[in-house]
Image (tube, rainbow, N blue to C red):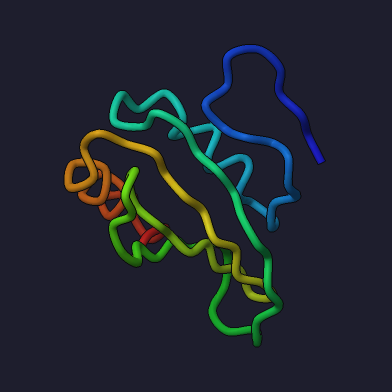
Length: 98
């Protein structure tokens, strides 16, 4: 697992499924994102390929997203003041977000 120091918006207390850390580090600079909190990882039945994000629902501080790989699903919480703009931007990632 990679660790990043400094003023990262990503909380690195938990592990991340394959590919998620690289994706989060690419989108971390987006102005809509205040912070990113990766959560629980659960095993999943394999289907598809690669990593994809599925926007689930708004929370009191932002939005909940599921990061899905072929073998696991991980909750990711985005803290944002602009949930609709962030959802649209996440969905605009070609082939990465549902």
